[in-house]
Length: 601
Image (cartoon, rainbow, N blue to C red; front, side, top):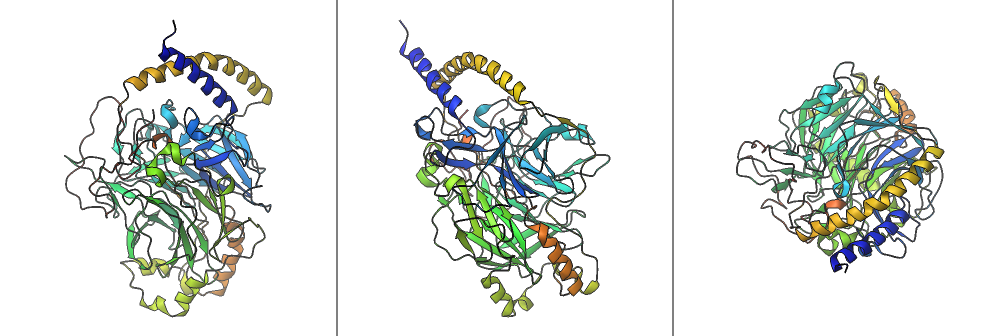
């Protein structure tokens, strides 16, 4: 007689088989529910999305009734930015990929070669960790493109890097930067927990392309960072990388890596990407409250201001997900908040500046709803059709449609009013900050271009991974035959694992990184300089990479538990030196500040 356990396993196989065969990366408008972790890059007239997970209704079953509520995205997605569309009717194009399916990875955009790279991240639902390779995507100009791997100069240094997920990433004119991150058993075969310092990937290097900077950073005594965004702003001779929000792990002898404190938005830390000199500046106005997994974009104003827009995010200590847009205007370093009624709280979304003055958001979940239970929030229907939102950066209002021919960006009225009242004269700049803000003013120096990710491409060779449709069809038939046997084994595995499963707190370290469409314009009133800025604006809003947000659906199941005495407060002062990590078997290290839910592996 067949036992109930084996009968349940076979029934599960049947359900899993039908669900796997019916899963699509771009569900119909009515079947779509939620999308998280997609990384975004704007190249030419298209915005590309890679990675993440999607939840959907499959064969009439809601996400909470399925084997698991979400599944990894198997293709690279793209949206045409030259056409008008609404979130309901926008066409999302799919491009097949052989690159790994990762969550919370970094995306580095090299605008000089019109391509992007992905690095780091973690695998969903306990999938095998891929080999340490640098994956590169070259768009074809029509929403598609080709994936391949590249061998960067100094590849030995690259393969020796600790692979992590959840750090803040950004692209400058010739490099990609990655701050912090969290190394766990889903990202690296030898996990090391919170990773301090930052990495630099130089697209043009002829010797060692990757460098590991472990020097101290001003935003945390511990040097760790998760769930923040990094943004490239057009000031100084080399531009500036600014850090926004997120949290820092409290590490040291006797300290649990569950302890995470928030970074304040009232103090902004930024670095010259060439000299590696850090600066600190206090802000004024209505600063956002502490949060993680938000996204940021930037826009150059016509009067030599630069606005950085921060959207969404969550604070697990307060059990709150936000539907808010805040604006930090430079050179005033003043925060303003967009005045609209909150209706769609979310984190883990990505956002980009598209067209002339619109922010396009992609994905996101209300993670704090239902006590951060992933089965429930993945089941919730997104009020943004297909997960796409359109926000007017000048009017500070959500729109029903994307318009590529919208008027050029102008600073919001609330920002212009602040400057018109003469408030700039009262700003007290931190050490060395005013010189950066005034760099290039009245011909005192030449302004360097600072598009997000613009720069020379790597001279590394790449191996193509394109496949013909016939080969794909044959492979699909073979894989389909093998999958039937694999599914039976998979169901039995999960059945046995379920018997000895025990709850553990989960870590949700996801980066959110953002890239701003930078500009060659700096704060000055020189007419020639303004003319150059206006010319640059023709490309600054379409080809600037997008911010990315993070949340790990594969680690978002279970009830809310807060293990950190520091959650909800600023990062505490350093108490002890970081401990040596044990050399035992790979295991998860968990950040209490994140979703605090049961790991699904």
